[in-house]
Image (cartoon, rainbow, N blue to C red):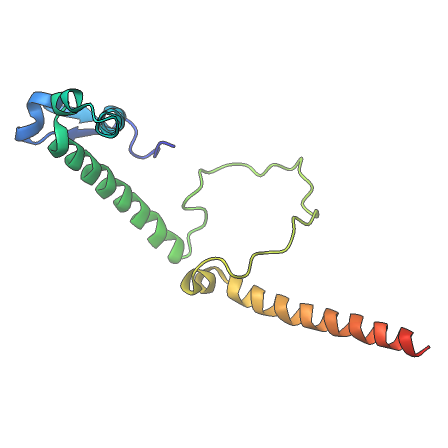
Length: 150
């Protein structure tokens, strides 16, 4: 899936790779070249792999993409931790045709790291959920024990 903030962006190519990639390359061409280099390397097609820049080009492309993606992720994560909502989602209208009262199942309480749960308030939800479950189990056991005595 493309990162919408990187689409259309142009990158300057280092001197040693300009014979293979040109003076500048767009994000879309960078991704396509990375895919082709990776496929050529995996297929052990060294002629095509070296013709497209080889290990140096692949390493530069991977580092460039990772750096750009990480910087965008960092901005979004910082905004989310500062209290801004939907940093990882595009602005959209809620779909009101869906049933908001339908229960989708129990939450997975063992997923995610603790700091993430604390930042989103889910840890508090999970703790109260566990307490409610214990009360329900106790009530069911009490009712079952009472029926056996009757």
